[in-house]
Amino acid sequence: MNYQTVIGLEVHVQLLTKSKMFCNCSAKYQSKPTNSIVCPICLGLPGSLPNINQMAINLGIKTSLALNCSVSSYTKFDRKNYSYPDLMKGYQISQFDMPLASNGKVTILINNEEYSIRINRLHLEEDVAKLIHRNDKNNSYSLLDINRSGVPLMEIVTEPDIRSPEEAREYLIKLRSIIKYLGVGTGNMEEGSFRCDANISLKKISDKNLGTKVEIKNLNSLRSVYKSLKYEIERQSDCLNSGKEIIQETRGWLEDKNITISQRTKEYASDYRYFPEPDLPLIKIDKNIIGSIKKSIPELPEEKSKRFQQIYGISKYNSDLLVINKHNADFFENTIASKPNSSNKFAKTVSNWMLGELNKLIKKHEIIIENQKITPLNFKKLLDLIDTGSINNASAKIIFEEMFLNGDNPEKIANNKNLIQTFNADDIEPIIKEILQENPKAISDFLTGNENVVKFLLGQVMKNTKGKANPKVIEELLINQLRELNNK
Image (cartoon, rainbow, N blue to C red; front, top):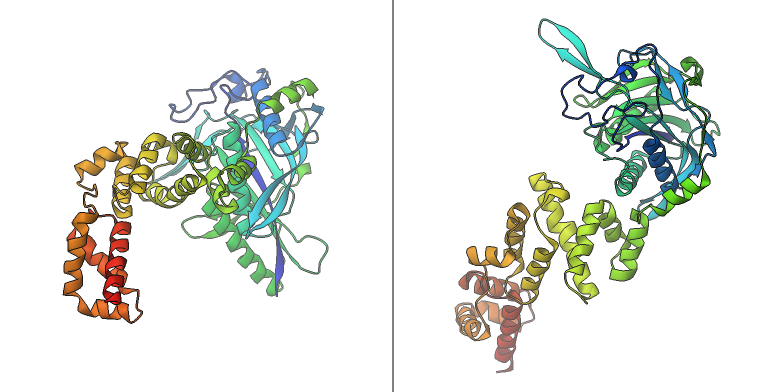
């Protein structure tokens, strides 16, 4: 039986503040000695009093506006009560019935069709400590690192509008891109600064009510989100087809086995016994602050993509790819700027090289674009060398990789590797005559209408010149000589 998939995502974003959510401890806990960034508030000691981080509130408002949310006039913090080893005080300071913002949306593109994913709410809370599990042969135990406890978290919850793992992946890519453009978080899933929980259910297409949802916790990569949802669709379909009941529960994803496993029965809001945090006041959000923050929002990916299409004549598909990463988009524009009064043809060439060769090198060497060493000016110089016929495309790819790794000038690399095309038309013509004399059958084939032999002959000339002749010049001279033979 066919079922409709219904997915909602809860994304936790660690905010880029200097201090933690409710104390003055540094929020930069990565790579710090274990339990070195703590205070009575982080530890949840009796009598410690939290203070609200204004910057976290501002970053939350900034994100809300970028996600088309309505920012609340009033918001407050609540105690979310549950017992777990990584939560020392037995409750988490979060937001329940008065979140910072609500009713937003994110637009994604799937197979050239736009879909709107509604944002139910955006709220702030504190992160928990980190459990470190040790599994030795004779002893298994867990340790607690409290450094992460209290780091500001922003939770973004969608409506159940997502209908496939593909849509879920595209939403996360778009959301992470917005987060990085705004500068409110690193968006690094592997480090845990951008974490996702997925709620998924299946229902008969004819049913109006949603099916029983299952939550998949703490997915730390786009790949794990996609694969876990694929697995759950198959698992729940098998259950429903065999007449079994889907249990509302929390499941964990085992990356090494590509399966989800049951962890606990799903909690309801009432299980957390929410009540207002007595040590923190009701917060009024001033409209002037909202207006000021709105002015600080940079050009976002969607707007930038539209501008690239209008100014540079690039397709929507390529523009959307270029702007996913802000560093990528900046590198593209800085390269264009290095060649004043350049045409749209140059912009398209830059785009093609970035989406083709540059992406290949990023994957091959596992280097993010921020750390690659090609400068926009050197990139422009390389494309000029191709355009003037000083190097061919094959040589350009060799030079491009060297630039990627060490940042050298393309002309220097071309000279060092002896890749400059030194053959002019006068040098090439006698070589072509010799190649034609050695290949009478190719001439015969061309004269009878088989123009594919030109590629073969071109290859022979390139081999003879050791790649130091311009293929376009060779092809033009070849065709001219072949036509002369045809006219005789």
